[in-house]
Structures are given as C-alpha cells and as structure tokens.
Picture 1 (cartoon, one colour):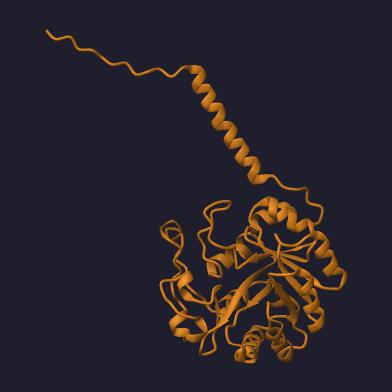
Picture 2 (cartoon, one colour):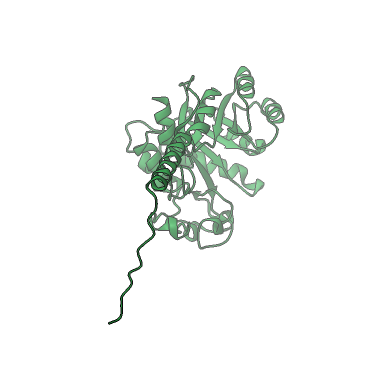
Length: 297
C-alpha cells in the first residue's frame, strides 16, 4: 500500500504575527491622527459656506460622490451639515436661463459637449452628471437651474447666504447677465445683504453695480494678492475671494484693515480648514462643511 504524505502548512511564528498586528494598528492610529490633527482654533466668528454645495467629487477625506452645484450637494451642505450658505457657479444659457455648473464646457462632467452659453436651456437643464463608475453608483444628479435652488430655499424659515460665482464667456453679455440674474433673485425676495457676487473680472462686476448699486462685489484672485487689492480699490469693490492655500494671515488682515470682506475658498482636511479659520476671514468656502462645523463647535 502506498504511503500518503501530508504537507503541513508552514507555521508563522507568534512573534511575527504580533509584530504585523502592531504595525497595522500603528498605521491605523497614525492615519487617524493625520486625518484629525489640526491647529487649535483661535477664531470662531466666520461664516461657513459650502463650496459649490458640498465641494467636488472626492475619493477620500471625505468620500464625496456628489457633483458640484448639484441639488443633492447643495442640500447636503445646508440641510444636513448646517452651512450658513453656499457658493454656486452660475452660467447663462444662450436663451437667458441661469443654470448652476462649474466649468465652461459640458464635457468636463457630463456626456454632452459644448459651451453652456452657446446652448439653449433645453439642451442643458436635466443633463446627467457623470463622474465614473465609482461615483455614479452613489449619485444620479443632473444640471439644475438657479431657480430650482431658490425655490427650495424659499421653503426655509431663514434664507442661506449666497456666494454667486459669476461665469460668462462673452463680455458683450455682461449687462444682460446681471439684469437676468438680479431679476431672478428679486423674484424670490432675496435680501441683497445676503448675496455676494464674485468674479475675477472687475468690468463684469461693474455690470452688477449698474443694475443693483447696493450689490456686494468681490474680486476672485488667483494671482498676486497685492495687485488684486489695487484693482479692488480702483473699482471700489467690497471684498476679495482667494484660495486659502495661497494667502497668509497678514494678507487677510491687510485686506480687512482696508475695510474689505474676505472669503477664502478650498479646504477639505481638518488641518487645512483650521488654518483658514485662524487667518480670521469673514467667510470660508469649504469642501467639507461637516468638518468645519465640528471645528467651530
């Protein structure tokens, strides 16, 4: 009779197992510390504004499958996470309907193509957002109008603050854009004190001043902070909006000393949001409203 030989599995020493377990636990603890570490909050008088709603699609810290400027993203920021308001990107279709969308062209976040200001409202409104399989499993959002958001806000006991990022590719439409947007806001009795109009183009902002002299106008700067301050003073604007990564506390205080409102955008991690808060701006447009709220409590 043949002898059957049984191969025994190689035994991993107990000390090795414990070492691996300790390494894994250390990694988890370090990861948790990195996620939650932040500077001590020394300033709490700041408005928390949801950046394009609840920010932009992100795989981590936090996972966010919701498209920017979508209804679900906006409502999550305001209704679930208690943002003081939202920043949204507003574009005007060829036939004059304000819609919420970040980029000039549709191909960045939908299956369609073309510039929004070259297309009719029927060609834009209701287009499905696409973010890829990993995101689309968790979202079924579509492009909405500014009015759809205003209709929802009209049901609230208090209206949220609105930071309106003005996007227009055609300078000849500046005045028409301003007239159309302000007519819509007036239709819903939105207080001008709770509105901020933001653009990197001071001439575009001047169109809003022409239509509404009390409009709060804020220059969006992606370049030199000092040059932006000079432009603001030249056009007598009310504020500056800057990337929180690109400015210092001293620059924020310089702007505030000139009587300007300061809004900083960006910030997803707790450490970044804490740094922005401690620079003492008037408002932060954050991609993680829940973290900002938690830090300020």
